[in-house]
Structures are given as structure tokens and as C-alpha cells.
Length: 544
Image 1 (tube, rainbow, N blue to C red):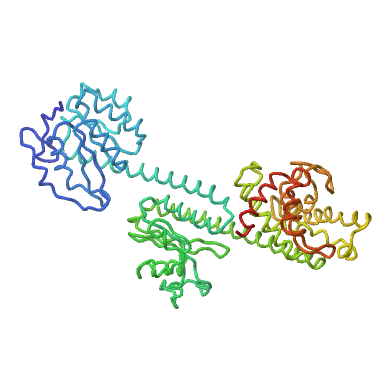
Image 2: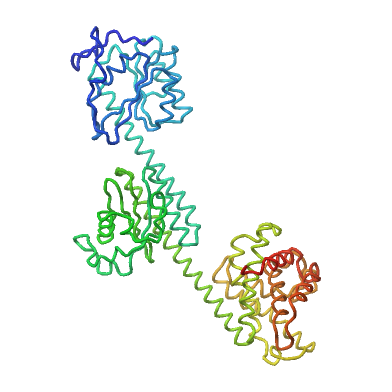
């Protein structure tokens, strides 16, 4: 179906071939094997394939040779294109199994596969079947050549121009995709508040940025490694870097977490990491890269990316942009963790303050913290409280519950430690601890903002004496109007208070305590919380 009469190949100015026999394609010299440009020849005439291979066999562009792929029909071409999405150029005949097979393939490449990178050069021996002006306007092709006008030089020029165009478009597209990956990574990872999860996310996103890489890992820098500044020779004088550990890894380094870097990499790669750290800038080799994080707080130090086969300039820049963005993320997570630890320290300080007033408070609040967390997790697993018992809630309630009686610091010792029953006036005064505790913690939580240990502690302090039927104090709230945290601590507090001795009472038997809590379900306690409490108890308690 293809018309190749009139082609010649005597020299660059002659047609590729006329009456000569097609050369044996097996005589073509093989080019370098490293990362060749893939060129797809689609034509139903085997002689066209052979001639094209001979003419272009020795062509190299940007230090890369050509890898020829052959298809003799549109159907074969579709299969090859599916298997090789990185084909740089297609030399495409129009008339093959049908008169418009080539044009149908163009539509398939652009519209079905969505491949806008590959350069398509239409070659036809029957230009009347596909008029050039009409085809150029109607189809997304990059060049149109009648076979009768092709010389070896023109084929060379056309092919190299197509490869250069593909290279530029591919670089732009990889840059766009890389920037999208970085933006997506920043959006997703900057929500993380845990350094371990953030670090693992950085490694995974780095691997996604360079899909050819076989693996990546983060490694910690030993304290004081660069305290003396960069070293001209790029070496760490005392070799302390070898003691550094892998923080987390992916790909071939997925199992390297916690191992010394020297046990994971060969000597030369270890030296590259040390050199990059000493010089304060990233380093790139043919088979690996070392990228640095410039953080204000102690960060992971270095990102090692292995097996990528060499990075072009565009990907090196993307790695640098990625590390620059992630450096900000490491600082943010570090600051969040410092704030988190400050909150925990504040909670413990307030808890200690309450202990000074009530000698039974210390162990009591710790046990309540364990019970509150276990009950919250059970409610979450059951889904009986909707989205109220989410992960964040369950993480906060244990520590926040330890502040439930902090308001007792304002209650006189004569009332707080009275061995007998309180009179009505003393009861009124004792009940003020709920309101006082809520006010103290709410004021402390104000500068922090958002949901925190202190804000939930205020909620618990003020509501854990409310009753499900509305007869509790200080506000007489009922049902779901009582914060879930308060409903959970109400059960945990009564259970622990009855089970242990107090100045004004002896300890109850476990069975009697459980019978009381069951009996108060729906009156004093939320039935859903009671069911969750009993389930935890039957498993052996919060530490089972």
C-alpha cells in the first residue's frame, strides 16, 4: 500500500533509494545502550523500515543514540505505544491497512492516549490520499513529508528537529509535573504534626518526584557535625557521619530505618553524603544524589536518592525546590512539637498543683486518663458517637482528663479533706471547683487557639459533674448538650472514685461499682459511654 518508488540513498542530496535492493538491516551498527531516544517507525512496507534504520543508525543527539521500534500497521503501533509511553518521535505512514490508518493513529495518540509529547512526522508515498494543507490543519502532527522528496539529509534533519522538540516539551512537562508534585506534597505534608510521619511523607514524595529512582532515605546529622563550618576538602575530619542513622526510607531502602548509613551504602556514597554536608550544598552523581535541607531547627540533614541513572538539570532544580519547601515543613513541624510539649508540660504542672491540695489526686487522675482514652477509642471503633470521637479527640482526652479537678485548688482544705459528710454550704462551695477549673483552663487555652489539651481540659473540668438527665451541675445540661469528653470522664471519675478509698469513704467492691454504673445508665451517664466502658472492662481494663 505504501509507495516508496522514487526513494534513493546515494548521498545526502539524492533520494533515499530508487532501484537498489534494500540493505540488510542486520548490518546496522549498534549505538550506545544508555538511555536511547525511542523512534517508532510505522509503515506496512518492510523496505521502508530497513532504509530508515540504515540512514539513521549512526545518529546521536545530545549524546544519546536511537532505539528503533517497528510497527507494520496501526494496530501494532497502538500496542507499542501503550508499552512505551516515552517514545520521542513517530515516523508514520498514512496508507496502511486502510487508507486513513495513519490519521486514525494520530487521533489515538493525541486523544485516546493523551500523549502530547511525542513528535509525529507523517510520511506518505500517496500525498493525494492526505493533502498536506488539510492534514496539517486537521491533525496534531509536527511535520509532513512526501516520501518522494525525502533525502538522507532531510530525514536526518527532520528527525533531529523532532528529537530536539521532544526534549524541550518533555523537559517542560516534567517540570510542570514536578512542580505539581511539590505543591501537592506541601499541601498534604504541611498538615502533618508528627515528625516521623512528615519525614516518611517527604521520602515518599521525593520518590514520586523521581520515579526512575530505586529508593530514597533521610538520614540524621550527628550533633555538631558542621559546627566548625564547611571544610574545603569536603570531608568530615573525625568521620562522625558514619554514626548517623537512617530515619526512614522507601524503595530499596524501605528496611534501612534505624541502621547506620555506613551499613546501608558503599564507602563512596557515604563519602558523598559527608562531602555534601561539609560543603553545605547538594551533590549529584550518575547513580545517586544527596540533597540538603536548610532548616532553622534540627532537621534530618540529608536526603539520599539512589538509582536514578543521572538527573538532567530540570530534575536537579526540582529536587532543590522540593528540599527548600520541605525545609519549611520541617521547621513548622518542629515548632508544632515544641508547642505540643509546652502544652503537655503545662498540663502536668497544673496537675501537680492539684496534687498538692489533694493527696489522692495524683494516681486518680492518671488512672482516669487511661480509662478516658480507652473508652474514647471504644466509642470510635463502634461509631456510636458519629465523628465526635475522631483520632484527634482520642489523642487529647487522656491528658486533658487529668485536669478535671484542677479547680479544687480554690477549695479550702477544711472542706476538701473533711473526713465526714459535707453540709449543704460546704457542698455548694465544693461544687464551685467545676466552674473555677473551667475558667482557669479556658484562660490558659486562649493564647494557644484551636482544639488543645487545655481547651478540652476546660470542657471536662466544667462538665464532668453534669448528668445525662439534666440534674447535674454547674449548668444542668442534659443528653448530648453535655460535651462528649465530659460524659466519658463522668463515668471514669465515678468508677475510680468508688473503687478506691477516700478520706470520707472506704473502697467499694468492683461488682458493686459496676452495678451502680449500669443502674445509672440513662440517668447519670450516657448509655453509649456506659456500654463502651463495660466493653473495655470485660477485656481486662484500659491496659489489656
